[in-house]
Every structure is written in C-alpha cells, then in structure tokens.
Image (cartoon, rainbow, N blue to C red; front, side):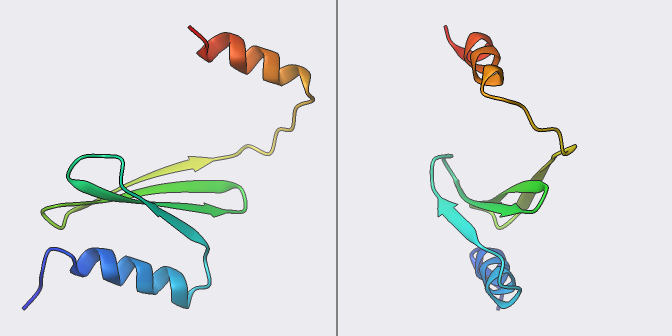
Length: 79
C-alpha cells in the first residue's frame, strides 16, 4: 500500500543513488522541500502532505558578474 510519504522517500533515494547533493527543509506549511544544486541549475522540489510533488527549475545562462552586481541586487531587494 502506497503512503503519502512514499514520493518523498523515493525522491531522496533517487538523489542518493545518483550521488546528487540535496538539502531538506521544512519552511512551507504542509510540505517538505528538497533543494538540489547541480551545475548550471537549481531545483526546488516540494513534496506536499497529500503526496503530490511540485518542481521548480532555475537555470543559469552562464553569466558571471563582478562585485558591483551585489549593489544592484541589494538595491532591488532591500526595503
């Protein structure tokens, strides 16, 4: 019989078997989040209390910036 946590354990097992580093966090009510960083991408995977899975992928275009970019970022995201 499949339980609501099966998707979470299956995901974690697949990541371990693939030797992909991940971090588990619990800051969204009703979900366990798994953060994955691979070259050029970051994945945010949420396994919800009902067993459903949501995946968001962030891809890098390879652009690199110097330290001045930090000022731009802080200006954009500071109240």
